[in-house]
Amino acid sequence: MQHPHPNRTSRIAGFHTMTPRERLDRVAAFADLAPEAVDRLSDFGNLAPDLADRLIENVIGTMTIPLGIATNMRIDGEDVLVPMATEESSVVAAVCNAARQNRDPGFTTSVSGNLMIAQVQAVGVSDPHAARLRILERCAEIAALCDGCDPVLVRLGGGFRDLEVRVLDTKGGPMVVTHLVVDTRDAMGANAVNTMAEAVAPHLAAWSGGRVYLRILSNLADRRLARAHAVWRTEAIGGPEVRDGILGAYHLAEADPYRAATHNKGIMNGIDAVVLATGNDTRAIEAGAHAYAARSGRYTSLTRYEVTAEGDLSASIELPLAVGLVGGATKLHPTAQTCLKILGVTSAERLARIIAAVGLAQNFSALKALATTGIQRGHMALHAQNIAMMAGAVGDEIAAVAAVLVERRQVRMDVAEEVLVAMRRG
View 1 (spheres, rainbow, N blue to C red):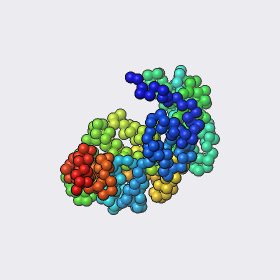
View 2 (cartoon, rainbow, N blue to C red):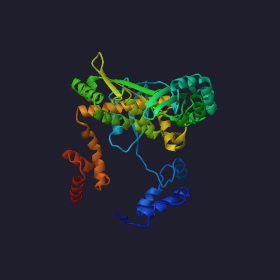
View 3 (cartoon, one colour):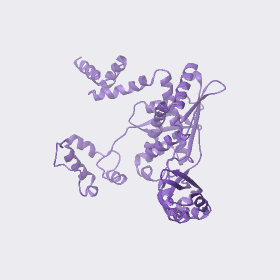
View 4 (spheres, rainbow, N blue to C red):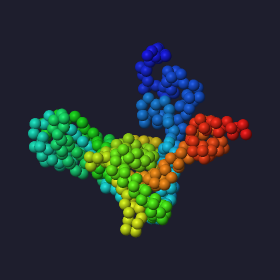
């Protein structure tokens, strides 16, 4: 198929050296953008263009995501307001509602520590099992090499903690994979552990007699787990029938990966929103969470639901949460810094604990909706406002059109347009 603009090209020499506005002008010409679209992209909002230009490459604008606050949360006896950045309706409301139904005593949390893993892969090792022992024998040397990479981290109480060496049988033959276990304190830690892996790699090649290739962290941070648990009183959530409906929904997620994928996606709706609001890495958290959900060899639920001796609903969650307070967008983005101030956190551990509690709250609300009114009723009530706006409603028209859509149970664009026309005719 011939391109409608045969003279257009994506090969733009020196694009990365241009200013954001110069890049935007080139893109606007390429894509025939309307002036109003260019104006929107040129508005960087609360992120300075020069900072945006340093956070990623080839910047032309920013993508604004709504920032909301989850109320009612009480975590480890402390009241917390939780900033959440997300574009999906009902996510913030779900956390608020779950926390309101569990104000006393709220959520109890814990963490396993701040340990991250860097992997160094050696291939072509003739005696891999003996090589594993040769590497383990040099633990002290490896510790010194790692700690020498980041004296500031060591001074803050972090640094090398442990050494693991695994022999893996793969389609490419046996591999000797060394794990450097590092306490990264209040940093997410990717840069720190990657630097250590690079420093140790040539030594591991010499000791193993193989060739070293990959030298990088693992996002399956199973030594950096965050946990939360809570009890919802049966009478507070609608009685035994609702409780048992929630249990049934959990049992399906525990047994069936088709359900577990959606179940865990709902958990990550809440978790990702806080991770994004604080400038942390949503992709790393997602990767770690889903890998952890499949650690048994079968993908399953990240949460667990049980009934207490008193007949109430007990819920718990455990997952890797490698988040930080220093480094990257967390330290540079002014909105992320403000969100951390709202949370009142002074350590990465506390942030991880709050995020775990939010994930559990989100999951409880989703399961309760499924067990009672159905997930669509509450979600579509909020979504109806979006449909009304897409149909052209403004001001007070938005709520009025949305109310009609919900009442008719027809949350559709064509219906919204008809309702809006009728309203304007009077």
